[in-house]
Length: 456
Picture 1 (cartoon, rainbow, N blue to C red):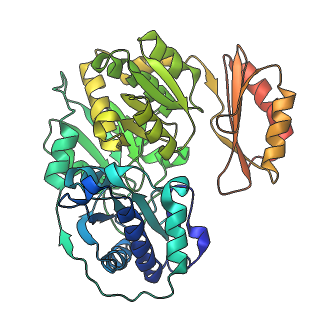
Picture 2 (cartoon, rainbow, N blue to C red):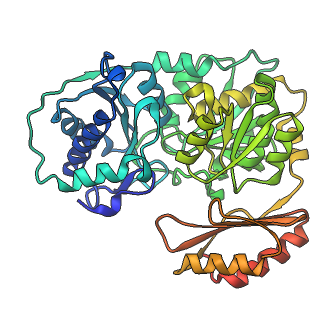
Picture 3 (cartoon, rainbow, N blue to C red):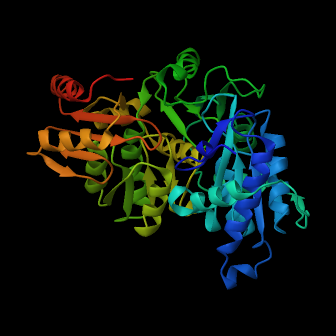
């Protein structure tokens, strides 16, 4: 087994070259051992407490990997509830709905078609990452010498589509207008789940890349601007109210307005803040530290408490629980909800956006316009071998600013700020800069680029 497939938040690699069915068996065996070891006496007595949910995405090799994973789980005596081909947020729903000790989704998310992997969740769908159990699972799996064992556990198939649909749509309000939206499923799980959940609504959907062929028309990563070309063209052609592009496992989305202009996810967080603060006044809203200053400003303006957090779903979900926050938004397109088990859901995000637009008397571009009051660089990567030394240099160079080290280094001034943080897996520093004017942004970006070197 290649140890490099174990990442900060999940397990991922090239199918056959790095991840095989034998690896899947070992990961299943190790995951079952680890998750069952965490069961409390109370949970242990529940009907499905000794079971794990297993789901998979639409990749051609996800089914054989899932089958091997389930055999590995069964070898420990644990039972499996096979919930089939699903979007990743349905896994979080299933774990809580069925009361299992956790679950595994076979997916490589937004990676190209030749990749696959495993997203592991524990009790209550809490994420299992490097600091919350993935290192333990890696240790157990790497120590297994064979893939043999008596399959004492059982496998039961469950179709949760109806229950999941009811859960997602319970957040939907009646709209004053019939909306038309373009949706690019990126040949991923949204191609199955959008029709299943939204198909009977008074909503006109222009479908793009809904089919599953084992290939992607474009890589299923909506954060890459060129991947939004199809949805932008469809919005213009069909005069849609807005457009949405999902990633491969449909836990993230990016939106474009009726003019086909990309809406940054921090601006979407800022737009949704007053909506959630009406639902739960004076509550906390969590956002990742790369987000525009407009997010905190809008939260405070509408009576909420902003909580700035490290980048990454495990940190965001923990912050949501710890602060009893109603909602959280991340620049990557993940949006988190307290009434969705403190987990993220792209479909529920779409529901809330439908509510906001359906109740508004103006277009989404007009709603977003007052939030575009700063100028942002977007995230830029730089190849840096000694990341810590470079961050220390930045802190010294800009020592007269307001500095914090929550995630890398963030330095703020009255009219501009920046964050530079290290990649978990590559020799890269990531940079985000924001300023009040385009001229100041260009000046400071050029200044910092000169210190960080070559952008990649």
